[in-house]
Figure: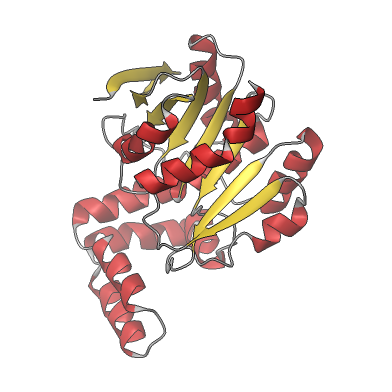
Length: 278
């Protein structure tokens, strides 16, 4: 059973679930629409080496839902400051990072902003490694944000478009289910609106991320599912080429749902050289 605590900084509280009792520390960030409990399957394999600090992101789980952030998005400095404060409050000099899907994009933002305070990073099926012009257009301009607000109340047109694209073979059945499943209620669409707009300044910045890795000698393990229809396995090739020697790419025979006990065992094997040298 995870211990649930709260991390407070600058008037915002984020819930944190702690797993394991390892002497090293791993901050873990989950995917969209989920919460920190998604990291529990990793604990049996990693808990003797790491203490896992699995955060609920803003608007998720037991964390705060800060008002007005769609209009006043989190800056990279502000976002990183919360996690640096948490590291300081717990008497740590540094913490490693793990981010899954949306959490992967946020981990990249933390490393870019505060490379001295965060160590090794694990990016698991990360969002943010490829540019999305449509997302930048919708999130970055007033007209686009207006369309987001319309979408919350009137999603029928979007769903019909997704159905047509699926019927034409332009999107896979799995992506079709994903898009409909993430937007089939007003509550889900509001979450999508709040998260995408509030976090719009936190990525992708792949080239800056790569330069940061090279400058500070950071090690990143990029884990992708071979059958992932959301984050395809070719994602990350650009990052590997931009930061040779810093990024190792691992393709697993799985889909997008990678947070499993088997992943924990795989990560534990990656950590064996560190354990032996400890």
